[in-house]
Length: 278
Ligand code: FAD
Ligand code: FES
Ligand code: MG
Image (tube, rainbow, N blue to C red; front, side, top):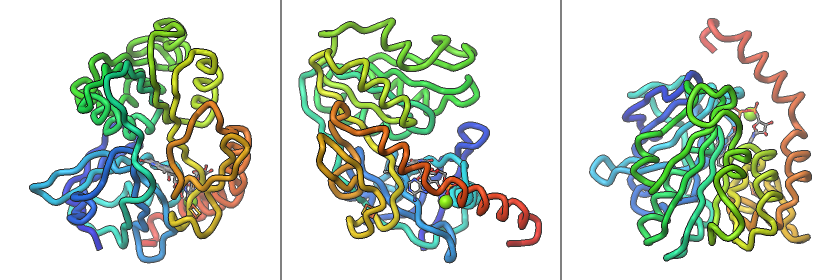
């Protein structure tokens, strides 16, 4: 059981939670994640480790309430416990030094971008962050990202803050082939695919942090199978970060959609039971 020390709403359905986790706090690196079960009868879901605090022996995660288990998680308040929490899982992000690095994040992916951008900066890279949100109300971790990156630009779908459009359009408007040596992208699958396609001939390495369905997080169940450069890889143990220019994003999108009907039924049933103390 892990005690929730702090919970804050960053956006209408995005919660930040600081959780006691002394052993993970000491060992985690940018790009790694945890698998949690919010309640004793919940399914397991993966969440990125966003930050940590040595004094409070805690880690921070950011969760967007989109389905039954993320809603159950986001509904927990400070003082409650997470039934179980395992980590740090996955390989850390690859962080080189002395390069011009472009960090791109969309939606709740912006939370994963924060520790990666910080790590790039700490290793002496020049970091530019491009972040996307639906509207101004959905921009998250702005202050933290401004400190982590040398330069931060926002795009919003409705133009309510920063550039009017998406991260890909922002990228096209501000960067040319040759401007950057490396990139990191995290967000919805269509966004990662579009950024990978647009930068294929730019001569820069682009790493994508993938978000396939994960169940055990230990390479045993096969749920997170992805194809990278024609080879089968398991995102929970071989990733979640891979060479974005080699990822089969179409297959990943198909696999992530596989349980949509079931997920909708479960969510509807959960919504029906709210108010019945269940
Ligand atoms: P459901 O209604 O069950 O599913 C909604 C959609 O979420 C599905 O269609 C599917 O595409 C995806 N999904 C469902 N189950 C899983 C699963 N077990 N694993 C992965 N994706 C799933 N979300 C955050 O809000 N914050 C994070 O920091 C974050 N980090 C992630 C890190 C990794 C390595 C991965 C793989 C995913 C991460 N996610 C994160 C996504 C998060 O795990 C899913 O949104 C969550 O599992 C959905 O569960 P649900 O029951 O609420 O939704
Ligand atoms: Fe089971 Fe990766 S989550 S193999
Ligand atoms: Mg679910």
